[in-house]
Image 1 (cartoon, rainbow, N blue to C red):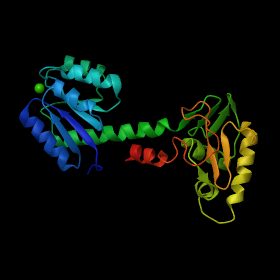
Image 2 (image 1 turned 90 degrees about the horizontal axis):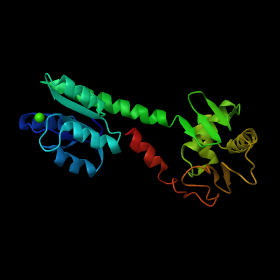
Image 3 (image 1 turned 60 degrees about the vertical axis):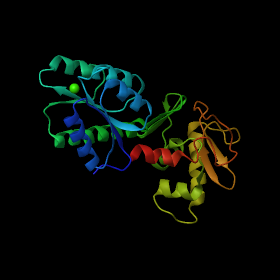
Image 4 (image 1 turned 135 degrees about the vertical axis):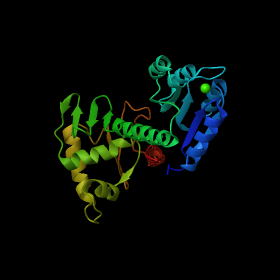
Length: 260
Ligand code: CA
């Protein structure tokens, strides 16, 4: 079964196929918006919120190829193209226009659903990988290499220092209490360990060259804990004034949305 609230756009002029595909995807838990031609599809897509598009190639008004091109110009949404047997040339063109996968008619509905899930999985993995490398200009955090580079040179952090910085930097502007950081960095909650976070922060600051009296990245929030801000991030260093930075309260929600 699909996760709730995942909405798929179907574009297919053949009624029988459109209805069968819609019914099958709905049965699998997706929300479905079914359209019959290219024009209608583009209008529906512009309303937003789609996680995937199932697109027939041969369509009245605006061709599938053109729909694909227009969608792709402004979105990375996965697109599965439906093609008739013998449309090899068109199919190749469809993929060149940015479709992610294709199915040749007649196809099995089970196979379509399997492809839908595979594409959604791939899109999700891509999103997670994108966050594995955080680039803040002078400061680059590479989770795969488990390394932090300050103006190109390795800061040589310990595992705990790395975890601490990576945790804070994933959501610039979000305030973390010492207790939260103990849990995330040391992996358990234990009252009395909060102060170890202070010494990790102290070492971290020394290694990345951040002056606590005039910080660039790591801000102390008195009575609360710490937060990360980046001068190169759109939110900017608004100072350690409170827990409600621009990306603060919604940061967790944003994470949930991409993992859903
Ligand atoms: Ca058609």
